[in-house]
Amino acid sequence: MSKRTVEEADLDLDFEVHNKIAKKLDVRENDFDVRKTQHLLLNRLNGIELPSRLYGMDNEYNKLYKLLKQTVTAGESNSCLLIGNRGTGKTALVRTVLRDLQKVHQEFCIVRLNGLTETNDRFALNEIARQLVKEQKEQADHTFTSFAESFDYLLSLLKSGDRASLPVIFILDEFDLFAQHPKQALLYNLFDAAQSAQNPMAIIGLTCRLDTLDLLEKRVKSRFSHRQIYLFPSSNFGQFLEIAKGTLELPEEYPSSSQFNRSLETLFQNPTVNGILRRIFDLSKDIRMFHKICFSPIYKLRPEAPYLDIDEFLQSSLIQGADSKTEFLKGIALLELILIISMKKLIEKDITTFNFQMVYDEYKDFMSRSQVNGAGFGMKLYKRAVALKAFENLQMFELVCPVDIAGKCPKEYRMTKLMLEQTQVTEAVLKYNCSQTVKKWATGAA
Image 1 (cartoon, helix red, strand yellow):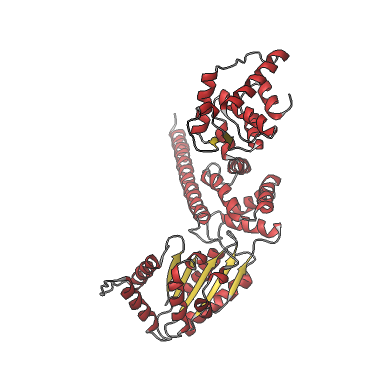
Image 2 (spheres, one colour):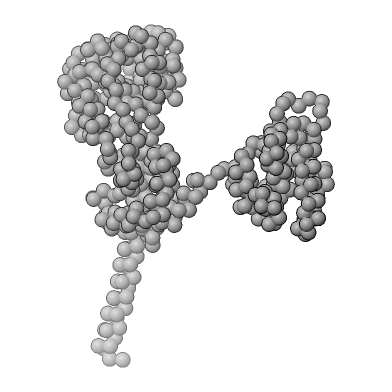
């Protein structure tokens, strides 16, 4: 072999090695992009990361932003109530306004309370103190012997400042639950401190109850500013589609965001995805139902398949829409399913409560008819004791529940009722791997 040939072979080998290394680096880079994309999208679905923009909330955003800006910049104390169904974006609106305020004005602190966790005034006071201490990054030197003393001290702090003091913004989630506290002491004192116009405060309540104001006592209502911002679900399907698409869109600064967003446009033009969104829109208009469907497709993103797949959306929607009891029935024994079908047949005869003996008699009638018609090949009539054990299993699974308290009556004669709808039984039988005779009996085709 000549010297030139050896050099060319070495160059070819170096070129192949370089290509392999470049491919590995490219895969690693794509892997990093996919992981970063997954992290962002999953954080959005979990509520950790805010969406890139709010759709159809410009008017509400401007009202709330102006209100809180007056508190932060001019030292005005305000109170406001955000009212809307669950999933309409109340929390996202408040968080977006606070995020935008913090970009411009950083000198204010936020106290977040939730009516589900702060179930009484003592818990709420402890949480307020904890968050204020955390914001100030210093530990209080005071010790208190009673709840009243600590409450009075905290209120004195809130009322002792002036317009130049650090503004405090209170976010009260599940506001209607705070109105159910005894004497509504927390709400009264917070609104009273805001009305005193000393320390700048803003109290923002979030609730899904339209009658929340009627829950307030007269003294509390008189100190509330009666500002209310109503949020409504998407009025048309196009807006709902834009909200769903905005949840999955990547910001422009993300690498390969343009390709991902283009694939997203194609995805949302697909009739399958449109059908899934249309069903959610017609049922509840709750975007969180779509978020649940998105978890599985996002989790399955890979460097080899970096874009969202239509089949994954379809499969995830079927899983989310599946009835839990129907899915549970797929795992029970054939005899137990036949007993449930017997109960369904009794219900069709307007017999809503029954005992084991009645169910077993219905089962025997079915077996007799099947053998007479010659359709019972491969099926056998189980003994009464075996069927009773299967019936007790159904009671243990709480698919069959007793109607009254068990007395001295034998267990096979105790009245019970079926905890399933007839449509659930029919759907489960059609999915179950059983004979056509049983399926025809369950669906009424026989």
